[in-house]
Length: 108
Image 1 (cartoon, helix red, strand yellow):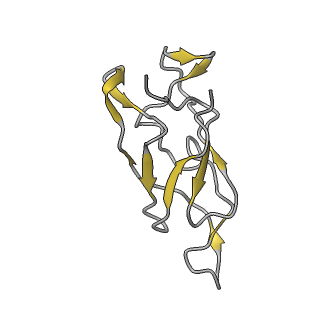
Image 2 (cartoon, rainbow, N blue to C red):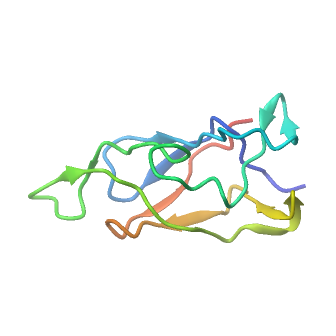
């Protein structure tokens, strides 16, 4: 069984200064331990993907974090409402700074 991400999973960005959270704000009807299972549409900056502190893409001039991108390596074999789910192997390459956003925990 895959390690699915659920609302509350901790995420990290290779250029961020602190971990962020994954928030599934629209209930999709599928839960694990009472928490909504995340899908590839849970990628809205500052809504689904929390801030990672300062973006250190240029370490001498950190800028505010504005995470953005599309989830990759999704679980196409397990879908919720025809949308692939996210697992511990899913990630985003941030279009704002180029960092890799990936799970630290699944939230379960």
